[in-house]
Structures are given as C-alpha cells and as structure tokens.
Length: 592
Image 1 (tube, rainbow, N blue to C red):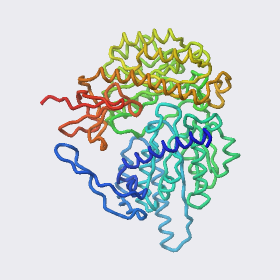
Image 2 (cartoon, helix red, strand yellow):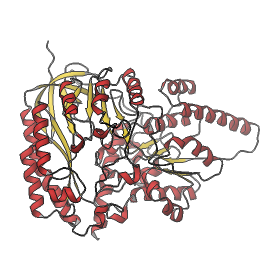
Image 3 (cartoon, one colour):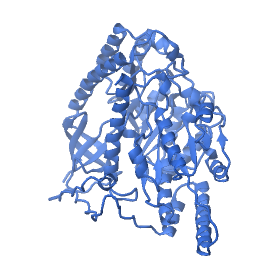
Image 4 (cartoon, rainbow, N blue to C red):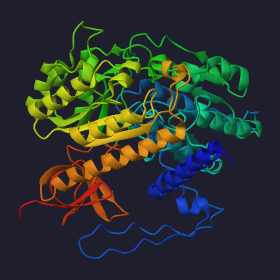
C-alpha cells in the first residue's frame, strides 16, 4: 500500500466516523429511519433519567433492519403553509405548486389507465453557509413523501463541521453504503473539494467519485438526471464534458440564480450549461435561514482581490465585489425580525468591504448600522491585516454588540515566505498590529489560520513561526499542511517541503497552539461569562453553548449544567469550572 492509499483510507475513516455520528444524532425525525436501523446494528435503549436532567427520548418501535417502518406522511396543506412562512423563496414556492399539479395529473392519468413516464431527478448542491441548501433539501424530502413520490423519504446530509471547517479543504460524501441507503429519497452533498494530503492532480476527487457513483445508479435506472454545480464545474468545465458524459447539466459559481431555469431545461430533455461571469455584480436572492434559528451568517461580499500565491479562490469566485449596503441591511433586518440573536459577518475579506463599490473602506460604517438592529451579538470573520483601519478598531472597541473576537488569517510570520506568497504584511507589522489590537480592545480573543510547509519554509522559518506563536499567544488557530493547488503560482515553485514533512510541522504547531489554548482556558476558571445556549447534548447529558470566545463549528464549546431547562437561543450566565480536550465545562450561575 503506497502513501496515497493510506491517505485515502484515513480520509474514508474520518468520513465514516463523522457520518455515523451525524446519523445517530438524527434519530427518528423526518430525516429518515434511525441510524441503528439503517446499518442493521442492534437498537440501543436510551437510559432513563433521574432528578433534574433532561428526560430520555421516547423508545422507537421495534422493526426489522431490512424493512424500515415507513415514516408517516405529513399533511400537504400544512407543508405548503410552512413553506409559505419562509422568508423569500418565491421561485421555490412556485415550483412546488407546479410539482403538486404535475403529480396530481400523473395520478389522474394512472387512475384512468392512461400512459405515464416515470421520472426522477438527482441534484448535487454545493455552496456557502446561509444559501438555503439544507432547508430546501429537508422541505423537499417531506413534500416528496407526502406526495407518495419517495419510496423511503430519507434525506442524508454531509455535515462539514465534523471535518476541517474554516479551511477550503471541505469534502463531499464518498461512502457508497450511505448513498445506497438514500435511494428513493434525497442525497444532499455539501462541498466538493479535496481533503488535505492529496496531490495537486486530485482536486475534487471526492466530488468526481460521487458523480461516478451517481452515474452508476443512473445506468441502473434508479436515477434520472445528474446536475452538478459549484467550484468543480467552474474549474473543470471542459474536462467534465469530455470525461463524464453521464453528467446531464452543469452550473458554475456565478450562476446560482439560474437554478430554476436550469432544472426546467433539464427536465425538458436539454443539457443546461450555465456559467455566468464570476466577476459580475453580486446577485441578490431571497434569504433562507439554514442554521439554528438563533444565529446566522451574513455574507457582505463575494470573490477576493488578495491573490495569495497559494489560493485558488479568486480563480473560482472572481474579483472582490461588495454587496450594496442597503441590500445587506435589508437582509439583516429580516434575520433580526426572524429572531436571530448572533449575526456572523463573513466574506473572503470583510475588511475590504466598500473599496470597490464606494471607493473607500465602509466596514466600520456598515457595522455601526448593523448595531442599530435587534441583534445581541455581532461576530467578525476573515479580516485581513493589511486592510484594518483605525476607524474599524475604534468601532469594534466602542460598540458593545460587536464581540471582542477577531478572525485574522496570517498564514505565516516569516518575511520571505510572506513576500513569496504575495502577502503584504511583514512580521514586524503583524506584531505591531497585534499589540495595537490588544491595547485598544481589552479582552480580545484572536483566531488565525496557519499553513506549514509553504515553499521556502526551511527549519529556521518553521522555528520562527513556533516562537512567534509563543510570543503573540493567539488564542485560536486552524493549522494546515500546505497542499499545492493546481493553477496557483505557489504550485509552480520548486523550493517545496514534501507532504510528510509539512504534516509533521503542522502537528508540532498544533502542539504549541494547544498549550497556548490550554493556558487561555485555565485563565477563565471561576469566571462567570455570558453564554448563548445552542441546545442539549445527549452524549454529555448537559446543555451546550458558546461565549464570545467561541465561534460556531470551528472553536470549542461550553458544556454546562442547570437546574432548569435552558432554551436554544437563550443567553445565560455560566461559571466556568473545568476544561476537557480544549472545551470548557461550567454551571448555570443565576442568582437564587
């Protein structure tokens, strides 16, 4: 077995473990049959609870593993009313009405012995947080079941947070076993990037493998059409046309607004190819909230102008394009009215906001307007060091709703590497910026992203990075070994660290950063901090939430006990009492 095979096996094991965990958490809700029944494993009876703990879930009725009990159909009128209650989605609502009419016509034709043609459609969705993928997939699964056009009514979703969230190396599901279990239902696949550790020629291999799996099912007559969207098609349009004739339609990253007409073309027997200008203005869509109701992401720009030598994003997403401030604020008002408590501002680089549209930095002005809305927390992600202005620092320091938490990716600290990777800061400038931020914003928590094994990173440069981290004491960091991206300037550089050494260095940096994080957690012992409750965790039998220092999915969480029910989305005071594997434990600290 060569190294590549070992890496693939490691990735598959990661995906398998993540999938099992997610399917267990789904239980017996409308997603499908419980995990134990899907896999054929014996059912586990939930332990009963005594005292003030959360009561155990009701015991599902026993049934044979190979004959799952059909899920109950929901009332179609109720489902339509629920869909109508969502913000926006005008095109989707219209298509659902058309679908219902079509199914009714088919039923009438069958009832009168008129000929009909069986049809099925398989869609692979990719995209960023907040684009409505999960909500629509779930709703369509329930509607299909109510119309008797799903044999199982199952929906299987890939959860990106269990992998390497925060980094471009997301993955699509590759497990044929789970794909087969979803037949007759909806298989929802999130991102289509290769995992770390693969060579530059393996970009998107998970997506390719998934498409091929679907193609086999199509050949077997169990699927009708395959529509592929996102970064893979944007990057390899011709290759997909030449090598994957099973694909019936493709859409690029600039064409998400064309999804409805593309589906119409597909079902009419055409082969849609929709690739709009990735440098065109940002399209505005109706917003669907796909996160838990108490927090939401708000994207303020698309694309990127930084063009770091190692990054493929500008080639797939286009140049930096700010959304109009009035459009952002209108979407934010909808989210606030819907009960969102924590607003997370995102873009490839939020600090550049407004420079293309208004000719000047406008992030500080935008944040001040957002602070006037009914949010409790506003969190900032992906600020570039070179674009942080004194006005922005003052705004973060002065506005109480803006969390004292900054995600500021630096990648490295060595001057030669920064220069070669087309980063505009020097090590001294980074040190000065961190010092200013700490001084102006007391209690600030910093998060960053680091890459080991970049071209020109010799042992001295690597040791410099480790010492830098010990000096600056950044509280949060995502650490990744460098993996060359085909088509980027860095991929052509010869002075390169091999993959094994890059991984070894990443592991060492993780060790350094873990000690820093442990020290930070230790400093919080006994503190009473405001926590946003995310819900109840069955495994730990405790409530779970986050403080200002923890962002969803990428940072740790706080597990806490309470003598009363704490609702998701509720802010409560929690006294920190312990730490476990980088996460904190505590207890509700309300006065009697």
